[in-house]
Image (cartoon, rainbow, N blue to C red; front, top):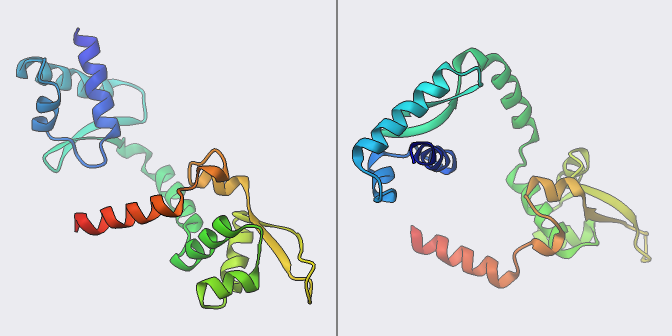
Length: 181
């Protein structure tokens, strides 16, 4: 039972966005005694600290969370700098959502929907390989046509474009967000 308890606690800490307090752990695992939970956390922390793994469980902010070991900081900082470069600006995200929901689409259609020139955002999304050019529209000037890429799907954790939330789902999410404030 002790191994199972450690696995459960490890999973809870892993999925927690913020430090997971002992009280929350205890309330979640009401079938276990306080002593069993304390012992399991102590064992887990010791195992991670003495292991050759790159992560550890630390106590911070009134709870427990996973953290990388300090000696790995130089490589983590490098990755974080790289990740910063890959972040999308609000304008790029808005442009990307227009492409995703209205594809295939042209720059003028995107700009009309956004109410602003989207050329810079499209260039950024092309560089980041989030959108691609799939042809030209049979219209005056033969404008380029854009679609999202597989990299877009991976970035947002989608299996296919059909997995995007519907407009009804988006409205519900927005309403729930307003109610939480």
